[in-house]
Image (cartoon, rainbow, N blue to C red; front, top):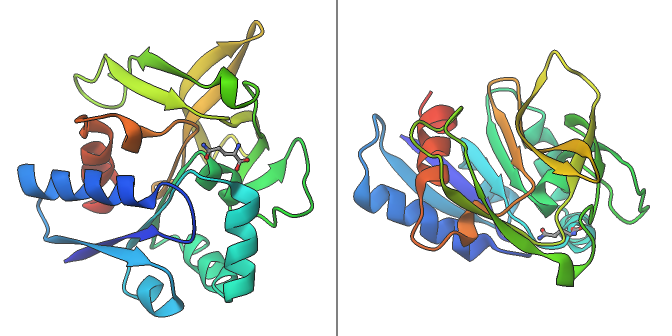
Length: 212
Ligand code: GLN
């Protein structure tokens, strides 16, 4: 059995949980999977995988520090036997380096990239884009990805460990909006949990990362 946790300190955790539930209700997996809403070290201790949702990385980091969960999260994400997926603020929280440094965001530092927060601008510049992910998700050539005050990976600091999965052109430059580190860490700038009725990204995460 594998337990997928969804970090529920702040942000879009319910949407991730409902996409996961829909996967479990409609797909078959090699192993039995359960979902855990994670608020405490005890919840986290049950998990094999953890989704860190989008939201607001400053708040998420501060809540993790104030509730005492931060050191347990730190240990979890640095354990190569655990699977981790960070979306948007989750990507920022996992990163080693922030381009537009904010002392309040104490990151978990595991993802060997340099990240720029709010790279596409403010809330009003949020957008959706139909993306072709078929290079890594078979048949998924029309996924509507939602970018909300999204970060981008400006620089990959360890190109051996981190591979870019998807890039967008921004001001004439290609920026990474989905990446994988080693076999166990996935990050996306966008929000697959906000794609209504489309669970292909979550299904792929379960098959490719959790069941492996
Ligand atoms: N810009 C936000 C931050 O810095 C992230 C936005 C999101 O998760 N949608 O945390």
